Length: 529
Image (cartoon, rainbow, N blue to C red; front, side, top):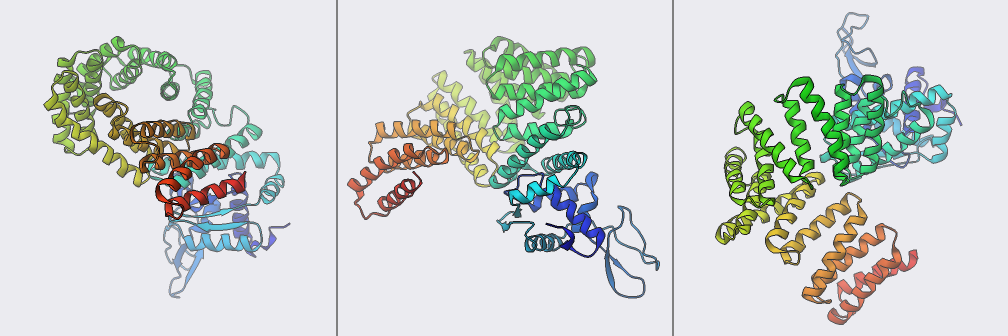
């Protein structure tokens, strides 16, 4: 097997070889053009091989002809005296031509595309061959470059707006990079080291966003240890990493561990920059958020302190001041200080409506809190007024979900669910709709265990309220069966669908489209098992 047939031009062949070999240090099943495009657009990482896809067109003086050449990053002149342009724009046609050439040489296996980008894949044997032809030092270099490639993508792209397919691809690439890191890179120069602190942080934050909290904790805990050893426990990197690790602990429900980390951060910031420095107030606010789960007296004291300082330093209308006021109102509500909660909620809601409009999610969230307090105070008319806002929160969450902004949709669904459970109870039809929406969000994020738990709850509730043959009950069965299939639990999926088949046959008849669709799904599962 040889790379000599890529092309006659030695420089371009060398660049193409590097591009192909770098791809071998990513997940071979799907490699998107977007990854390389981001590197090309990121001014700090203009690598030599990227010039394959960023040709600069230079008008030859007096000839009227154009030639493609690859110069340095500065504006240059051709020997005849004509001036060149500094064009680093991405040329997809150059990328497509090279990928097609590599496919023709059987060096790449497949090319395919979707609405968002173009992808290719490598056969595992080609990947292994590309790696093994390198020396150990060269493998280390390519492993680090692959990590940098993903770091640049994560930093330069709004990952919350990325498609689900792209998020899954990036996660697969990250997993491969971590595997390469363990095999090839030493702890002092690999992920978790101070040298790669930026990449480690980017990996950890993305894992956290995608619900892979154990992987995120592994990233941040390794970096924290190395930052403390190399830079000391008071360094900015150490403090930032400790806060990131605490945030992961919070997501995992390990509130005591999160509080321990944040207490250290707050103590250091108070000593180093003072109690009213904005960094200190941010740390105190974060710690209060953690105290909120089980240590509400401490949360109350911290929120009141942060609110007073932010009110003085930033003013009553600053978003940070409003955020603290809203959280303080929640603590007042939970500790049954309803009058104090209303006094905090009302100005927050008025200011958010004034600044953001009455349909903005933040305005809706404050309205939801106010509705709950009025209900707890048995002010039914006022509670009903704000109940309508819960419906709007659901609508906004669905809009975010439909455009792929899953993290924001998840947060809004959770808020709507908390409000509906408080106002309406667990078994209310509107509450069950929100449970269903939240289950779908877990499914989109591949958190199948959590999705399955919620789908089961919705099914049991609807069966009890509506009966086993009602369409909404049967739809809940279908969705539970689908989650089971994604988990590989085909026998369980078969049991769920068989029951749906019996119900549909009896109610709708054997020839009804819904009955036939269920029969087809059962047939496919039977073929798998």
